[in-house]
Length: 177
Image 1: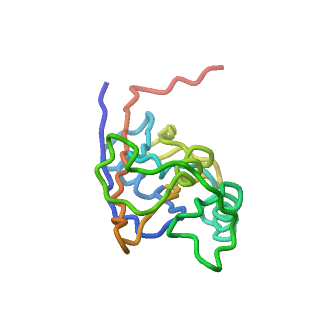
Image 2: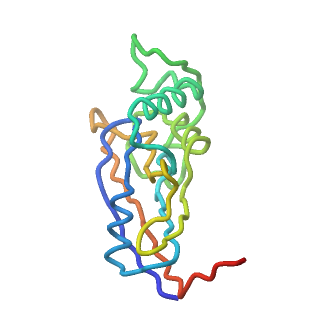
């Protein structure tokens, strides 16, 4: 089996957003030369996931983001919460420092970002490749859904993110009748 890998690395400085990566995926497919197969798009992070949805409509993206923020309360200690914060808050117990694998100095409390990523996005998605490009429905696009980007202020470092695009080649497609 022939497999190709493209890693896309970028800083994530805005807290919550959805960004279309369909062109990046199709570009990697084109570069690989794969005509038919599958592509697996993977986030290497627990607070940023992958979604397949209608991404071209900005009002829908805003609705999706606002829905996630309203339905999963932010930690009261989070740097996102300020006097005019309009979404609900709560008390979570999570702190990065409690994780023995955490080696960051982090003043933010991001339990809500972990929960949002778990409920509203996926660690990875797999989509078919046909005739050298993604086989998507009319309104489908692939996007990242970031739930915990950082602006680098205070002790909270800018999030450096990695998306992996795994491309698997199929020998042929046989249509079943």
